[in-house]
Length: 298
Image (cartoon, rainbow, N blue to C red; front, side, top):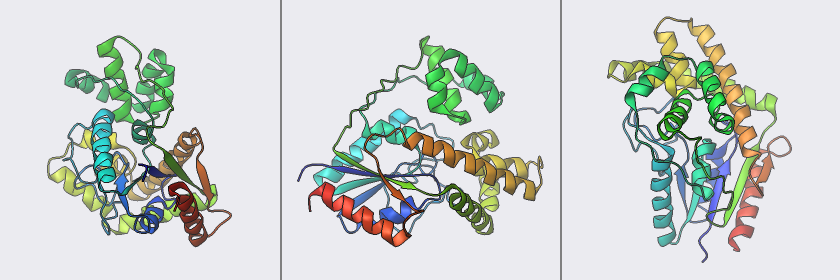
């Protein structure tokens, strides 16, 4: 059988993991997580890890360990090769578009060693300041990087050490024959699901998780740079805001993150959209199953 790859994308809280669980067992698949935060151990509730089934690329490094897109690309491509050798189908599932691009497209990235002095200087700046600096140096890189502080600093680090704009070759040729399934969901429904999920995670102990990480010695700066849940909860634990205000700000920030994710996925060629507004969850799963069967010729 020809080696083929399936990717499941969509905004946070859209049901990507549920769809992956419904498909991988039926099609002799192996699920590979494409999430820049689920790679870290002890970041469980805030990243929404589902440990009810086996996934590759989850809990593979310790908190604060440097983990670049280059390293991710190398590890996932090796994992995919092993999956193919077993005669199985890799299902790439997650919301980190930059990481997914590195695997499904034939992309190359500069390999530049971390500069701790430079990182320390940039960590003192706000996300808006960093975004402005990067925009003056490399507009396209700023668009790709978005408002993630960790990635903004890394992009600036590469530019300053190489003296060039980031030489990422924007090759949109697929590395493997690929089926890209995208979950599209009405904004109002998506925001409702995001808000409910935040409330559930708070009840499940998300604040305690962040507190435990800090007490175990994990840097508050590093946690803030992860963004979203870890940033807002760390600031709450520093008494910079109230609990209610933190929760509302977090929900609003995740709404914005979901919009940026959809902007990213819309660039994908030949994506097969599954619209939750028009279909129930069960109907979407059936439609996805039909598309997978056609793709795999079974």
